[in-house]
Amino acid sequence: MKRIIALISLLAISLSVAACSSTADNSSDSNEQNETANIHNPGETVSDWQTALQYLKDGNQRYVDNQTIARDTNTEDREALKDGQHPFAVIITCSDSRISPEICLDQKLGDIFVIRNAGNITDATTLGSIEYAVEHLNAPLVVVVGHSSCGAVTAAFNGGEYPSNLQSIVNTISDSIIGSNDVDEAIHENITSVAEKIKEDTVVEELETKVIGAYYDIVSGEISWLD
Image 1 (cartoon, rainbow, N blue to C red):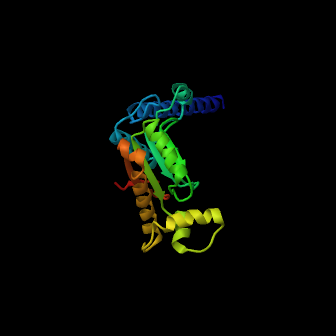
Image 2: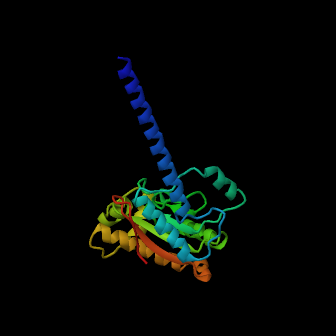
Image 3: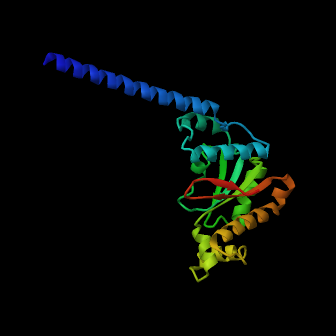
């Protein structure tokens, strides 16, 4: 009986050691991944739009692959950002709860300047926010991110009447999607239209800020870059 108890104890110890070893290995893999990943330093100013775009592309790929960066540097990031922010990109996207730019692009505090509204439309408030980001924060890249199954674009495509404030959003989108054959085509048309309007902004034009469109698939999590 004593021998059986001893064997059980040894087995328990072995399993515990194996579990600890596995945890250590996973932690090591996570640290190694963060060291090799293309991650923006919150205190770093990025002046090249291509570098900025690569940060976004790499981040989305990490998200799709379920290999996002460890969120254990918040204190350091806040410290680095206490005297100012240096976002490398401006993201205009929908308010849809299934889309969170910091998550699906796998970015940290201070990385991206986010503007959200239903249908990722552009108006005076949106343009003013963009102007602030590109002129005063020196962000070299603006990305308009639309997404699959967008409710605002679907409403505009299907037509109908809505409460006055929502109707103003629907009307704005409707002007951009005339002639679209289906909702997904309308979503892409809306992305392109918004990007073109931003390109025509005086400040954006003078600073030669790069503006591109992107399409987020809510099922796969993948972003297609349209420029």
